[in-house]
Image (cartoon, rainbow, N blue to C red; front, side, top):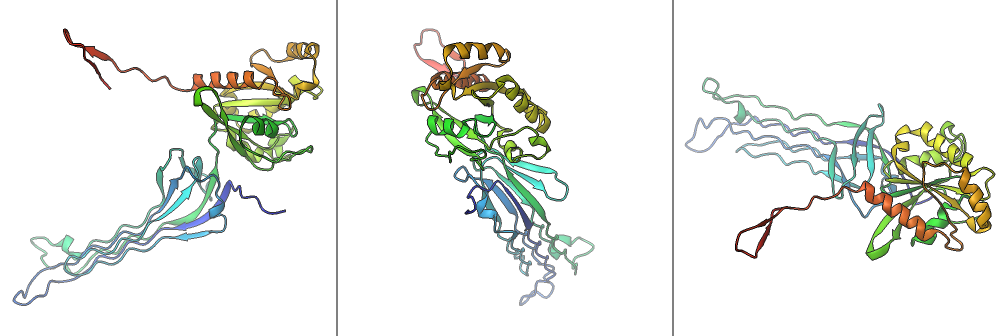
Length: 353
């Protein structure tokens, strides 16, 4: 089986550039026997910078690039010539990338805005030339500064997908089928558990050219927080979702119990996930008649909205989209309208932005 193109975790070694040494030089020209110091400063060492690129969705381009080293700064020279700055290395990464120190596990920063740039390792500053050290009492300093040394270390880059709605459910609950039905995404679909081995994103169209992003992750099983299955590895992809859509198949023995198991796994992984809005979808409901739906509805939790859906017959999908869109509007901040100023006797309006 070929390796997947979706890579959401890489470990890389990064080393910035040394700062260039300052110059110790005296001005020597014809008819100027005592020109004084004119040593230039050294150049800055190159940075290694991470840049959030909206066109990227995976870290595969860094999977086989383990060692990244920036250029050293050039040394200063006479006539106050500044050394060349080391060339920066800019690494494009997807939106939602988290940079961590590999040794301590400390989170250094996250990139969530398009084209946002953050320095991962800073280049050393260039040393000062002897021209900077001249004084009234020391007019010919014969010393300069060396450049600052480089920074280096191992770093972990983790990708957390940015989506509005995250799908949470057991294997074979119909998550990938729903995503392929309501969006143009084409995830792998088959009748066996753990068909989905990597997250998938899809853009769901709504009325009036509105849309939202839905993320499908591999299925979660009971005991996943203890390392069972593969779902917990990908749960970080729903940490930034506004809404969690829990999906439980209608052929499960106890739908409420299934929902509680999923909820408990999220609680064990990260309790902060329970703060997010939740919607419960009972999938494969084309197997149920109205009487069974009524009996099941009475057993469902009252604190979470629910809907019966079927990707095969399209049942309930419109209602599901309405519920998700309504919840998303609650999450979006309301922009205040700018005040309008009316001048007496004037029909013109001035809007103060």
